[in-house]
Length: 311
Image (tube, rainbow, N blue to C red; front, top):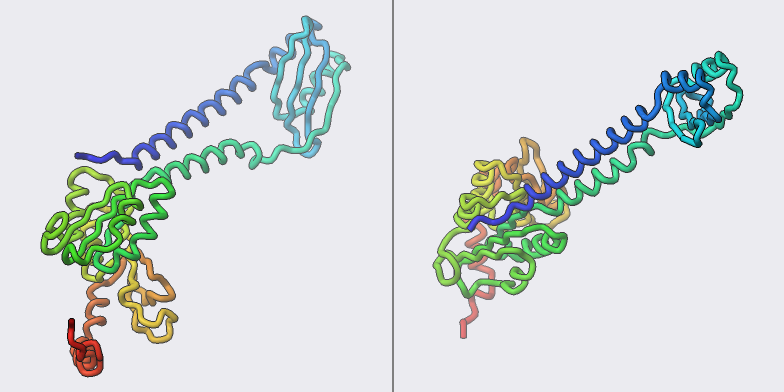
């Protein structure tokens, strides 16, 4: 079943509100500007139907607003680009019953403030009403949990896709259910959920019509690599957490060095989150395997856990 895309709703709601707001503002300005004209004022002065005029002007700028009281107690407003021309027109008709008030200049920021507030509100709505997918593998799912929970608490539609080797290794299932809109679990041996990799489950969702605004992948480096290859094909922004290659977490050892967008980075101090489409996963995996044989030998030789009998 195709799931609802909140991104479309958020985007079109923002677009409609902005268009309506701009139209109303422009329409209001046009109505005010055309409620009375210079020609109408001159005709009223000729007919001696003008009772009183108040001119609001900042003396540093020539523009101003005229509040015109006509016979019959009718009120009209006129926006003018040069108050000096108005005063010359009044002098021409020897009209002296007017008052000039000095007002502070209006800031363009204040004029646009209502529009800016609405745009900010619509942007927040657009950000909140988005589809997010968090993909986690193995122990990396523990790190995916707080990310998914925060997004879910903020109102995002969150599909949480997690993979484990078997049913016995599944962790945080209840927490995942509470932190997601849709929890999808897969296992390598098919003992729980679907027998599929995380990438297969994610691809099923995409091909079913789900529109994701962002995918967040956390887990084994090889898993994140293939998640990014998949999302790049569908042009979905993807964030990966490179904490699996971190060691001391202080930037001292250089063990988590990697290449991101052609630049050298360190996962512990520059990340660990990066744009997954810019990470050189092959280099990272090659560096991680350089001392694999030595590490295996050292572990078997010195780790006391291997020497204990399993009861």
